[in-house]
Length: 476
Image (cartoon, rainbow, N blue to C red; front, side, top):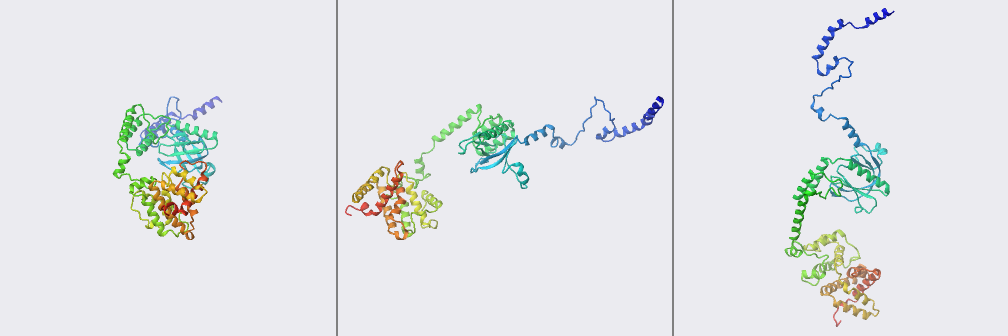
């Protein structure tokens, strides 16, 4: 049995002499073949010390664009891992440095290692319902800044994220621990990100767009060579000076001081005609001095226009005109342009009356001066009508001439309005309600505003009804 087994074993062994010639020919043939097929002629049994050479790629493209190592793949996957997600109130207040109107909205916020994404709804259930091409709003956290703020919103628990591209976001939640958790999560994500050169270059590019100062360019050149501090309050408008920039900063300060000290005074600019005296918002006596008159020309023009085409208009002086058109008329008057109230753009008479009321309302000191307010109030309290009228007449005569002349022409005009009461429905009482708070008011408001308003209306009403006795001559 042993011999038969041995013979069987010998018969199964290949004959070296029989295959030697074939093997040599095969290896010679494979030696002349392509380098990548050389491994096919080698034995499948390898010793532990023999290493299989890796195939060498001769294409340059494989060494650059397509040579992804395991570390690169892991790093890329880490940036897409969701670290935190949930609902927050979000408002975008700046886009590329341009301020935006604050508009709060609820967003589903997704935080990854490198960026934040804002969705209108929860990402998981809404993922299937997203329209083709839908892209969430994305915030790159590289080089971003995060800080609590109480000035940008009246809401509580608000923090701001500012990116290097000039975008600013406000995030808020009424739940204290929730917003605190979000703040620390975002801050940790920002701190973990390296201060990459791309972030720095984008920050510099944005700052260069915001300023053309030579000193700023010099400081930015120094800033690009030095590491930036980790905690920055603003990435857009603040310059990060290092110790070596002290001289540059002092030079900028000295130049600013020289510029400010050499600025011409307001009087010099007015004399040169670069700055013109304003009509609206100026003291009455200054306007009259500038025009060398006792009644402002604008007041005369408005009164003439109303008496030409507004005496019969229903609710004249009570009905408001278009505010935008009134402001346009105000601008024209302040620019001292030639004013023609018969122009088609001022065809609405309520615009003219609105501008006249605005002129008296914007006087730094009202037509009835502050120092006379209490005296007029005491006079209107007098029970005897004749004594009351006499006191009013005495006070009116004491007024400065511009105030007296302007008051006289205005009340003469309002008396004509009241004479057409049957048509325009504006009685002396209605005109008193309209012009009382406009023409006289206390210098300091007190708790008696309602009482003062009542007296203001009564004073105007009395001066209209007794105009001839108050403004007439002694003989009258």
